Image (cartoon, rainbow, N blue to C red; front, side):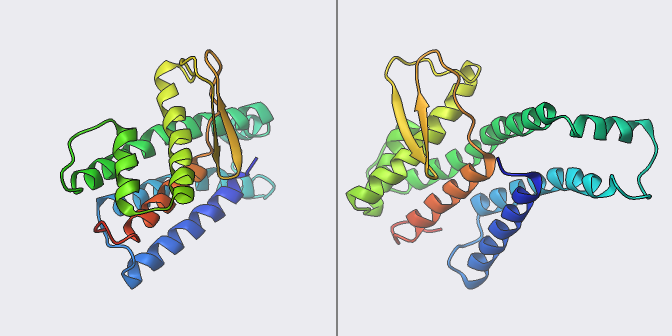
Length: 210
């Protein structure tokens, strides 16, 4: 499992690459890019407080206030840290998915002669219109569905409710969806990286304006 420090480094790398693309004009500044940048900045800010306090814990500057003692007492408990990260991934996915859904709806509306459809069908239309080959199409759609079903399971308490068993690969890991079973949370930065990569694939097809 990635540590808080690992995730901070990953966010820095993600934002640096994103800023580079914006600077050279490969990606245009828009609401989607702005929302993703803002979201990752807030995520970074939240994690940074934990990392900063962790650096202080063995130094003489550490405050003796009971709240700080309580914080480090909890921080040292593996279960607490694991649950914190798990719930952060769950809540974060719900929020970042809303950002992703907005850009999907916007892109779909720009396709000629289309009408409003489900999110999955809208995404299929976008991928087809982008001109991806069958291998690219299948990979991107598989990743999309892994995130979509995970996010949708949040409405059912994180449990998959449909009878058909589904398996999807996302970032090299297999996610299995079985009726009545709890859905495995997706690491938040994994979801963000995949969503952003999908967006880049789509706009680089030159069928859509970024």
